[in-house]
Image (cartoon, rainbow, N blue to C red):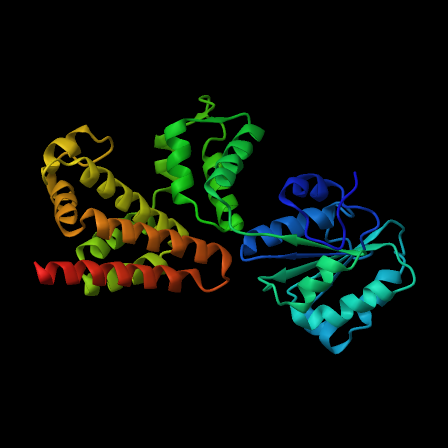
Length: 352
């Protein structure tokens, strides 16, 4: 299989590349804002050379700081032979701009038979390390960004299928909604669920299984964030956000919860005739039928007319894109979004 070298590995090439990197490639820079996916793919690449990554004769671990002080070492390790035979793998982690000179020395090295795997973190487009990997024929760049909903569905179904399991559609939707964009966290949650099914004669993962294993206080706390946001209760919102993030809540998961709620409000509001929400709510699926949750939903309908909901959905979409692509702290992005929406709701209530 031929790959584009000296450029980014394209999404369609990733799976094949992870199984068998081109033998002409000396070093691969794995980077992106999904730390879990960076670690997972770097591990897979290293194992194409040596399955036992604890083998001291064939595996070398170096940090970027070490290479900053000794940039010649990487080329030296690349040219060294294993005392016990077999190709060697050199893992550079964590790494950043300080490893650029060392990688340039690797390219200039006369000979060697090792694969260098660099875990580069979230490198910006202006990164010298990233630019070198994308343009030098002896190197490759492998970007790792947060999983889309479709990718998460594939991840869940693929992991379940490997264990001889299937996943109910309702369970799959709920699991994907709960998972965030970090591949490592997603893998951990999926592994917990599959471990729960070990020994179960029922080979289908149900919604009840998912709720039993993955339902937690962080997920419940997100409902409190959504309620406070659309109610415009700034003090309650601040407390709810602190609680969610302290309990491991995921920022992308929170943003998607805001989007679902805004979508539901938009659907009902668009189909309400003359401000009569009763009939529109009755026809809509998945909406609360009674009790405090119903009352809160109706309150949000009165506070959020169609125009304001349209603006909110645009802001939510922008925030999710920022979480996935800018490299800025995603919790800060989610907080800023919630506060902006809550301020809008508070202002609307004050004017009424």
